[in-house]
Length: 332
Image (cartoon, rainbow, N blue to C red):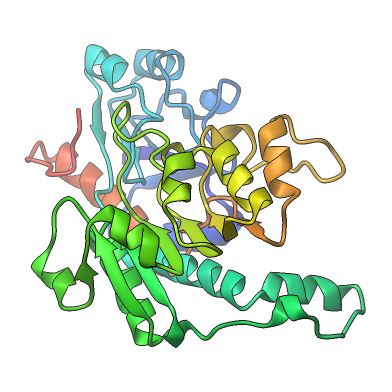
């Protein structure tokens, strides 16, 4: 029986791993923390490992594990920049990813963030948590059906977000380099500048291409947005210039900002800094702008459906690789 050491398995995820594995019959070893230079020893002798985005599948760890028999690296993520693909190729390791999972997981979070900012619920709940039940002018809100939502990127997640906003009654416009016929049933495509100028809410769902669209959301981008508009990013942290966003919030140009992703987020996300200073001073400034700024620690895919998809596809990838058949999700 092939042993698969799975890293970064939260307690809530354990029963899903065991239930889904009934179909495959692998010997699963579940490790709570993400792969690092200390707990790499948990996988010594294993033929396969499964990692997630916060794991260190770097040259050092891959080389150590390959010496003890590692052959397969499975990442239960769409992105794979946490895996040293060059080293994996050099070592002869086979690497496979999950090309996609429930788009609703990300889309529902994007809509939740947008609605919280639109209806000022974080602000209101913060006050009632402190026993202040008065209603002030900050709590006054527009209804979503009287708003225009701009969707940037209309792939599976962007389209699902557009459908959800449309279902709430919003006017939905969009920008994408590649316009899809399916999306045209839901959105009206417009040039980027028009979307930024007209939308009351901008939700970002574009892929990140290193060296091509780094800090796509910057001072110029924000300057083109409608005054007091809301910005939501559940895509990638590298797409946004946080200092520009801070300037947008502090100047009043942005009415609110929410994100599930940060550039270099491994430094902060999945760690507890309660009662301590955040090591990144820029992010410290950003977090201080709550409740106009809402940050979630990369929980977009943390749903029952998405988790099921990620585990099942990963184990299916391994099954195909072991059978020496063509694996469509293999990246090395």
